[in-house]
Amino acid sequence: MPGPGRYDRPDRAHGVAILASMPRIYTRTGDDGTTGLLYGGRVSKADLVPEACGTIDEVVAVLGLARAHSNDPSLSDELLGLQRELFVVGADLATNPDQRARLEPGVSRVSPEMVARLESRIDELVQAHPLANAFIVPGANPVSACLDLARSTTRRAERRVVELRESDVVVNEEAFRYLNRLSDALFVLARVAAGESEPRSRTDEPPG
Image 1 (cartoon, one colour):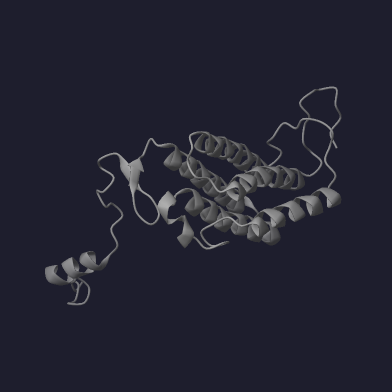
Image 2 (cartoon, one colour; image 1 turned 180 degrees about the vertical axis):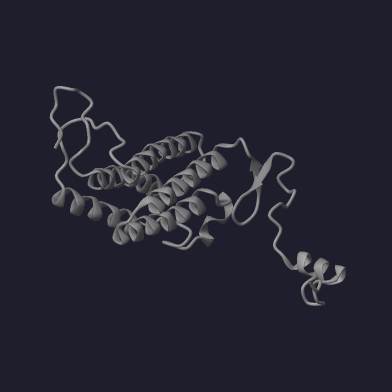
């Protein structure tokens, strides 16, 4: 059986050139325990800013898990839109305070319109799917369980933003409002995804 031809195994120089053109996953700039802010400046990785942004990143990941489990194209598209909006929230929070004037509404700064859209969506969902007057035990199916995990993680992100605000860090109030509304929206979406099969927190409460 013939061996590999000249095009099957690139020579060493060609291989080095390919590696040199690839983006680096590691930069070594964070080896000192700091991380960069948008538009310059560095802070400790233990600072409240990366803690808040990291928690938002967790929400993005959990929404991705919900989307991966979903067989509903409409829900998948909606979750993808929320993931993209959370990148705006993260950029808003991670910006060097001295450079906030460079932020663009809806792109790198949370806008009132983003909050208003979430409020309208919540109202629309609740009108179509009235909520039960009882505490729910999550876990009816993988999608609703992921949405509840995203909801609770969003609540944690909201608490981190409150910590930022109380430590005199510049915080866009619209970003805080967005996270508050997002947790509500995810709660309603989880109930819709669960259907009528969710158990209540008390055994004497009927489902539905």
